[in-house]
Length: 217
Ligand code: AMP
Image 1 (cartoon, rainbow, N blue to C red):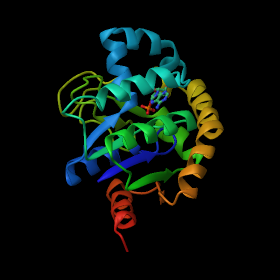
Image 2: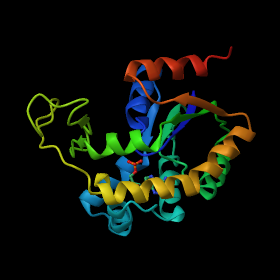
Image 3: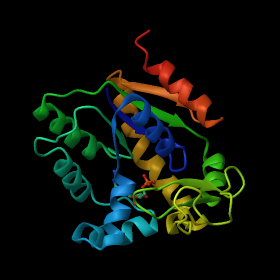
Image 4: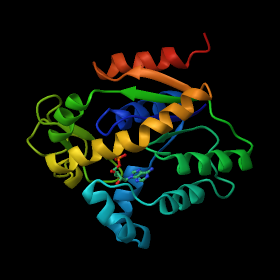
């Protein structure tokens, strides 16, 4: 299966993508995680992306598209995958569409997690993530607290409050989200790929809604 998952920041797309990838044996690509890792390692891509990510702005399409092209290069190119946070603009969607066509692949669906802005703000301002790239577990100070304050349950790394999860940046990310995503969502709706899923509720409930929407009938 080949899927894209989109939704506002904090909609739970990372959590749901991880779950779908484990249960449906899909490779999971999160451009947010790839960029954060590149920034941490100070690679050339990371250095170019750093100021955009920390201020909540979108990284230029060319840079993100090149990262994606590299993933699909070579004989290990993914055939079954879920893209999390990509494409995010019409230009990225056109690029990805072309890339898949060159590989002889098509998409099975675009999962759109719908979460109101107030809920996004509540979720993001309390989110704490594990900066260990191989773990990347996510917590919430009240909704899903770690056993020990600010320490990852899974790998023991000290949790961080992402710069772009701070209140002033959340507002900007939401503004950018609506400015660019509304058109992208409309495009996927027009071509019949969009699966609109209410993203509020327990993680397992949202997951069940997604699986139901992916069933052919
Ligand atoms: P995320 O973890 O998906 O919320 O992404 C975190 C940040 O990474 C975003 O606010 C952007 O700065 C950047 N980013 C992630 N994916 C993309 C993308 N497809 N296009 C542009 N910027 C991106």
